[in-house]
Length: 123
Length: 425
Image 1 (cartoon, rainbow over the protein chains, first blue to last red):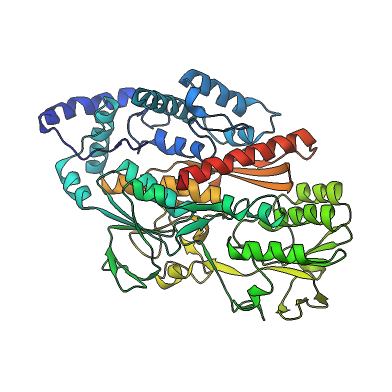
Image 2 (cartoon, rainbow over the protein chains, first blue to last red):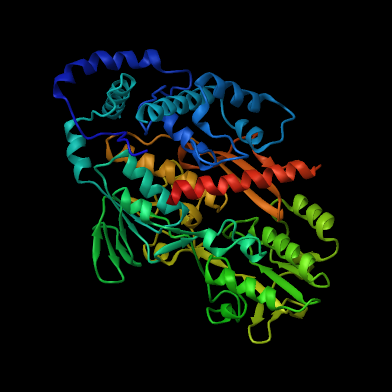
């Protein structure tokens, strides 16, 4: 949790790479224009996912609400899309998932699973 | 614009390749010195301070909070109903200190927004680059005739948790069977829209078990309320005729109280209660008024994308104090807003543009010891405005099965652990 996500260090040597990299950025952007940027805590994926942790911890003693730590990107994406698309679903997650686009769900699923990997690597 | 987009692309591309730590030298110089001051250590302020510090460890983060501990309002109605202790509601700031956040135990007295200086009640000053105001609510003691701070010792509001919560609990315990409990609800907007009705449910739960001849009367200054259908059905099913709700148009609006005799006056009636809980008129915490971040409404208008005050630059307002409708004044909203606000402030401090996103809220309300109902919403904050995401949100199903309500009660308990964990532990 204390991992610096925007670190104030700089390697100037890499400066010349920037222009080349900037052109790559369009290639990895999705339809919504948001970058599938899983490594920084200030990306759109991080902002979207920040709301999830108000209820869902990554580990701990939750009983009725799932902990996010065991979810792969694929599984989380599938679950969220199910919630979004089950027309007669009445749970809180159904009501919430309907407010998110498929692209946003992909971003959230990828970001949460990337955070899981960072966390388990830190253990 | 071109410059900022290309810089953003640059940083995004860097991070896409795992070089997220790298920022341009000019940004580095700025952020190395950057100071964030957060006023108010509730669900909004504590969460925002922690997220900002984690995102940008070089940032100096100071939390200004007069109390040594925070006593949480969510779940405090369970304390009033005798189902939970006040200790379970109480949280310290130890975890925040341990993470490098400076906790200043003082009251913010004033802010010089031009000079970006906060003055505390102990005379010391704090400089900031960005200020987050998360002061919650204060009561408008002048607004309901007869209801001042002294009167609240006899007619508790219990709308800030702590001693007031325990006072209301004790008064209910001391009341004889057959007594009348009155709850007066101020006109919206107020903190925790479903809160008065959850409270009514849990007081009824206590009365039915211990003082079944008693009566609970809700005198409402509003015509309708949050989760009304679900609450009304639950009251009927669980408590029969014990709970009576009176709308404003049905002479429900209390316009004067007498503390000594516990008398509540409506337009046409005077009601002597045995226990009276007054949920009084409110506005954004006093410091928001001092800073002039509050409009004539008493609440703080903000740019919904950045949470920056539309009245005072470099001051961001989150939680109950802000005007964020249709997001409700809830702990869940404050927590979600805190995280989004912290991220946007870090983006701005590191030379990135702020980005609109999607936020959500869920309010669980207990209707009995092990049964709860919920309302959810999903919101866009694009273009500086909050808006409901169409087709999303809503309340628990009307054909409430007991097991569905029990499930939501269990979810509520997990939610409380998660949100207090994120803010305090």
